Length: 392
Image (cartoon, rainbow, N blue to C red):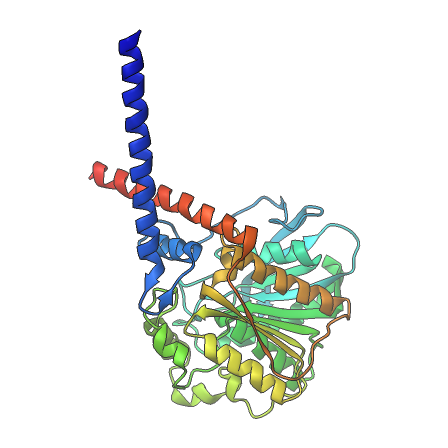
């Protein structure tokens, strides 16, 4: 029996040594991933970016739920999903996805425009399905996401004209999906944030549908060569958007320089922003589009538009789409949903004075949760990388 105890003792020591070694390796790896030339990243942000930039996970969130789906963390009754085609300019039809609550309504309507640099292959309604679905669940709204046509096959103004036509379609057909045209908002991320505010401008200029509110997540607001600090610092592409992609978007979507100053491509430089709906603009610290989003919020305020601007520290471009794995993404989704609910209930309390709120990375128990999950994900990534090496 003594020899068995000795073997067990040695096995226990070897196991403890192995676990301790792995913890050290994981800790060192996460520390190194957190260290960047642009600043030190929170652990969760560092791990997610490492996984994406090293092709260990896919950026695409290619979720195809059944026709009746759950709300993605929003609670409440299941949502109804509908994929259909709607007519736009030029006798063309474009795909559109709709999530709506069950019941008689009428329900508020949110037009959501996905990001993707106005380019084919950079984003679509499938890659943004999780946020579209979550907004429907968390706001009790009908969320309509049109798949507007993009460059290089279609240059400006096709994308924004398609997007505006989608608003007109929604208003004309609201009775068919229990929508309330008196509670109509626009929202979008990145290029989609640009489209959201541009469609609000088009509706104002064309005496179109009244837009109740707008939510712009890290929006592109100018195609001009403006010397923004964030464009210079975070342009490498490591933070999910590069200067190269931005130039590519400009070259293909707005191939003529005269297009760069058009208010429907560069709303930051529009002569008149008055009369636009109250806005929530969310930016990310590690994002080349950060400064132009905040500059647009300031311009809206100067024009008398009620605006709420929030910068989230420690996160990168597109972070709200990662709400399922990043606590800051959940915060951003919560702020977006709360703003839209308040707009629908006519309880928004914001002024037209510009005031940038800076939201710190998760603290307390949320920070512990993010840290723990970051190390667990890191362990998985290291194990996966090791297995891939052994299989080569």
